[in-house]
Amino acid sequence: MTQIIVLPHVELCPDGAVIEGEQGMSICHALLQHDIEIEHACEQSCGCTTCHVVVREGYNSLEAADEMEDDLLDKAWGLEPNSRLSCQALVGTTPLVIEIPKYTINMVKEGKR
Image 1 (cartoon, rainbow, N blue to C red):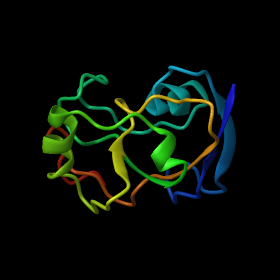
Image 2 (image 1 turned 30 degrees about the vertical axis):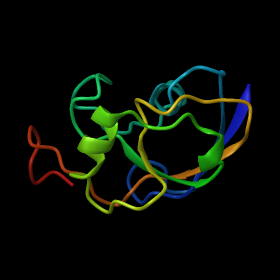
Image 3 (image 1 turned 180 degrees about the horizontal axis):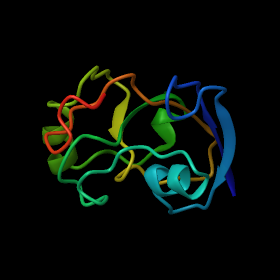
């Protein structure tokens, strides 16, 4: 199991959290498994940007994003050089520190966040 530190998010995780993720599991799945209800409008199929996270530590340990993920990330709110779609970024053996952006773009639930 690999440690994932989730920085505080006003709605989803106000106090932050320290969780464990299995190697090979997506960050999104690990968050959901620990009751951190990150949006995932496309059901983790790399079809939207609602599960966008910023990897503050451990980014270089992740496998590189593929072209589809990179194209979608260009549309994410608050994009940073170390942004990933949490449904596509797989937990490895290196601990991670992630931040869930304050806002997300969700065409299905527009105006909710």
